[in-house]
Length: 250
Image 1 (cartoon, rainbow, N blue to C red):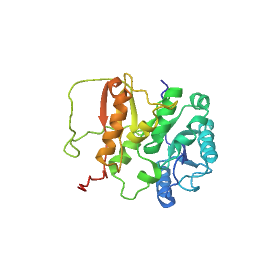
Image 2 (image 1 turned 120 degrees about the vertical axis):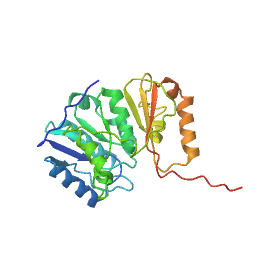
Image 3 (image 1 turned 45 degrees about the vertical axis):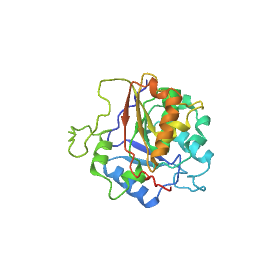
Image 4 (image 1 turned 45 degrees about the horizontal axis):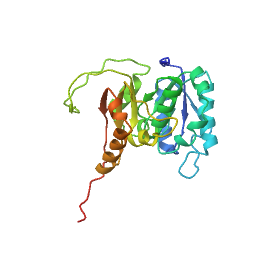
């Protein structure tokens, strides 16, 4: 396991868009927020491009990914947003480059595919968290999200109050293991590929957005049939907001 170095004021953070193209106004807000915290920001050459539903061609997005990892002056890489597209170039990534230049890599949603691929090919610990345009650049972004993000470089004592967001224990007990997983639909899409999620002896985190209950059921069942649920030592269930309600038609 490779743990990247923490960030310090004055470090340079690289911003890339390995999936969809970000909202430019929100991206600008997010970048200014990082600068106010004392960081330098380097924007990937293709991070604001549009290529259909992608932020540039596969070659352009992969080049930004490689460029940021190869540049030792860049201490962290934060993805601007999710969407779709990471799986399109996962098999072309230079994983030896990633292994030899470890740094903070941050994102969620479609970035789950890269988290899984990087962890299993290199052992680098990556971070599942709010992204620059879709979250931190949102004028209405929750303060807690920004505080938790700031833990990367400004460690602080945070006290969780269950009254704010009650937790429900579905199955009590104790367990330990490395935390793996992320977006449920992306984890399922990794099955049968060289980047298939490895849950053996690990804690599995799952979250998703905008999925109907039957879709969540179907994806969980696919993980069950592939042995991924039985191999995990425990589960952390994240946010499944904006779920689509089932409508009875007959």
